[in-house]
Image 1 (cartoon, rainbow, N blue to C red):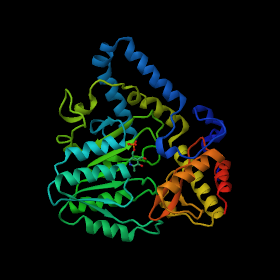
Image 2 (cartoon, helix red, strand yellow):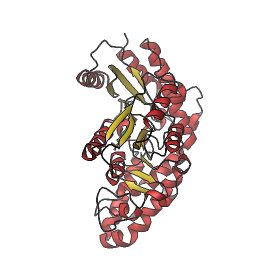
Image 3 (spheres, rainbow, N blue to C red):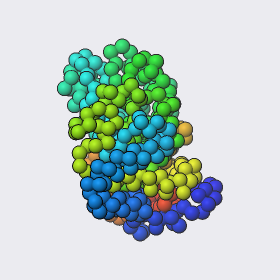
Image 4 (cartoon, helix red, strand yellow):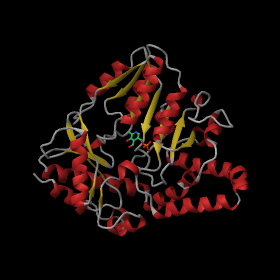
Length: 385
Ligand SMILES: Cc1ncc(COP(=O)(O)O)c(C=O)c1O
């Protein structure tokens, strides 16, 4: 990292022991499932013990205010009003709750982009097919040089007949930070309700959800915010709560209360968000984001040079991940991508996702505070042409 004092010298090898990651592996995929620090796991275990000490008292008396308290802390972190935010298990559930709450009609048009996450594409295809609506994917070329053409294409797709837009804040395989403010503004100009898939955004980007002006926003706390797995949120603007329903209808049938009691479950992963936030804030919010962005840009440029390629997007579209084209001559199939993934792990102990997108193969690197520069050099050498 260019400024060695980011994080006051606490990051890299010095902080790695906070995680349970195996020694001597090069874990360059924080993006897929995050990696939960030991102390957050310990906090979740402590919540489980407290619940089991007197299960009735915990579930009926203690839990409701505890849950709202944890949701409020999370809300402050993402720039949201606490009453507009609920916990969900993951971004996939948040997206499905919104989609299943809408009544699409025959002939409606639902707009997304060609970078939409595959599971979200499936959910969209399902609700569209059921209603006789049409799913339109606006093309964003990749590599991308500028967004003038894609934004114009989005503008055209939002013409009358568009009933919903589903837009990524950070794309998955291609790791692009999209200009979400501009895209949401376009949707508002056309009066098209917009759901933002911010699966990767919390902890990677500075968020102000009330200001963004979307209708719904879902994000994971278990990726870049260090929460335990199964901890995510769904935010909705005040006027959307009346019709927004959780995937499971339970005792409470309306508003945020409907999400706060999805039936009996282990609430420890949601409650441990408090510890995740404390950890994140102790590391320093700005330090974490700046460190990760600078490290991934350094690594991206180093890999691009080693592999005779270029960064796939302007630096303004980079958060804590970059997808670089594989330097190998290989068919752009999922099978070949999976084989390369397995080879990097088996031979080099490099854990990094390999994707096939747009007829080419991409290797997506993540940067987190426990990573070190030499780990990306191991990857560079492993595939050096
Ligand atoms: C853009 C996007 N949406 C949704 C998801 C799904 O997240 P989860 O598995 O936590 O539901 C991901 C996961 O990587 C993603 O990248």
